[in-house]
Length: 242
Ligand SMILES: *Cc1c(COP(=O)(O)O)cnc(C)c1O
Image (cartoon, rainbow, N blue to C red; front, side, top):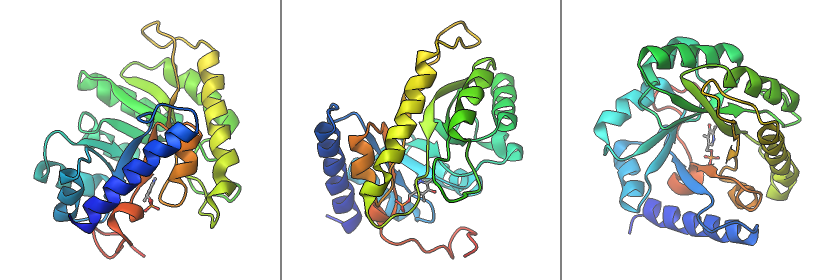
């Protein structure tokens, strides 16, 4: 078995165990293999091991990969998305994890409507202390949910966060709990969407290579793991600068 396949299977098992130890069903969390900078061959090794959910950060890279890989892959857009690139990915990804402004939500709504479909999205929330460039604040997430709920063509399914890099993953436990609490708060508001259904923001995308176990224990529905599966990234590929 390839190293990538071995890593994928080991981490998937660890995630199942962590879900259980957190009091959730073992399949509560889905492992997303974060494949940015990886080759088609590397991605296929994870696919052969059973991976069907893959995460990408860049629209161009995603569009190059989709036609080269099996059609039953669910692609997740997890990187910052510019409004002028929305049209390129609407209908091609299972979930957009990184919606962090109302402006972007409106654009996804507008284009999805034009294309006659509904896009599922997560609101990216930034709970880390250090200033990251992207993400709503905890309070901003509630206002965002209310605004987005009114828009046709877009369905808010939950929240995503990129936790700070820490040497001890326990340091992020509180932050994962906070994200879960915000999602519970949003769901408990009984906000109607444009079709008159109550919105539920219970899909939590949280946890990366350093802290996926803690995130799964705290109720992650998606954990996003790149390095742990594929090894260290080489950012000289696919137009990453440094
Ligand atoms: C790159 C990336 C990941 C995966 O990070 P690793 O530390 O390699 O597991 C997860 N989420 C987002 C948003 C990313 O950009």
